[in-house]
Length: 251
Length: 289
Image (cartoon, rainbow over all chains, first blue to last red; front, side):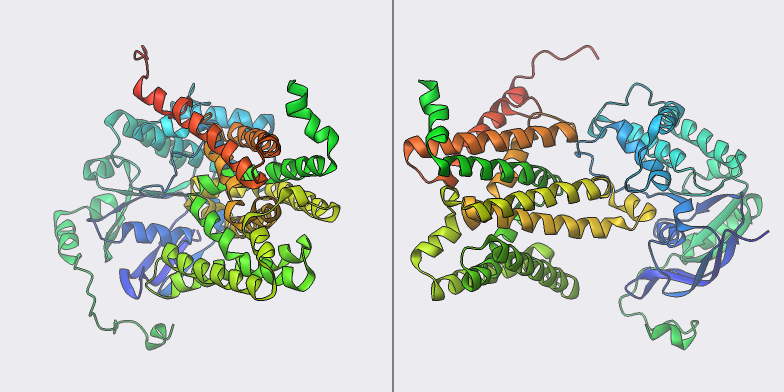
């Protein structure tokens, strides 16, 4: 079984400072992975690297799927909520891969958008402006768009942040449905209980990889304590990393 | 009586008919561009660009007189040079984009005024700064119409990526590479419309017919299609009203058009149903749900 995404000694970061250091591993097709780690562990950076928004400082990220076959939900989606666009139209942009810049969505597309909005509990909101939605409803709308993207790999960065229990339960149900459909899902999460109950695989990150494997074996008190300790601060005067091959610094 | 005031000037004078045709074409292309300028929080960038294109338009003017074609071409080059230079400086140094744009447009404006005054007369300078829509010749009218046609066709082509890039730029980057191209094409359309507006309103007021109708429309609807339709209608009404006002009150046509738009803006700020002052202060009894 070939991996969807393969990490070979990947270092991701900003301005030469690593946020994810020397990561090796692979995302297998159909996996349901929780990405766990303290604040500043590099979870968001890794998500951005996976979807191709951030190029690695060193190492390679190999994808065996088209970048457009990845749906990405950023942590605090950079949405202009004052923009005069309806809930329906916003969700419909999820069909972009099929419609492109010019294609229409047609009757079939309209039915799909209506179904997606129903699936996240936003039926009846179609004609509302997105600015009138609450935080939880906005998150539901973003999930509806991911649903419509019909992607093989779904990357969710802290999808349950600032969302109430009912909403997270509903959205979690969607994630389980995606998993059952054979899609690959990677979600950055902070709720250990939720990870232990619902996610078979866990990637524990603290700038470097602490552990990656079956959740039971990864989420041990020992590993979690190590993750807390490994999150050292961003050092402006840090020397060039010696663990990297010298040519990596040429760029 | 209403006929004498509202219609007779256009029946009697060919230059008024030409001005009316010109201002309608300007409104048709400029209003939708203005709506996107506003939605992208770029209304003051539009203002800066209007000044930035002056040296290019001035050089075109010096080489071939009041040929809108040469002025458009020169303006496009100057506009892009300023946009590019300020973008490069902002990215390459610690300066923020707004600060570097301010610096470059001021330099550009000074350069433009210097170029016009070195070779032209004071009348030329007045023409460039304030425009004169009552003096449109056929060729100029055709170029304005051409610019408007180009604007509407290109805007239709880049509409979807432009909208999505406004609402959710990160999402657009994950599904398409069209965002950067759409942004560049949009900037070009801004410049094209500003140069068109030169002749009617001058460099100082050209951005007015773009931004004011868009600002007005935002007080009347929360739906993008309607906002664009309202902005276009308002721009046309202000253009017509401004010409009538200018004819009877004997004030320059450019300021007259903008003043009419300004009056509609003031009324919208007060009475607009979307966030207008009256609605804010006296919202009425709260609803049941």
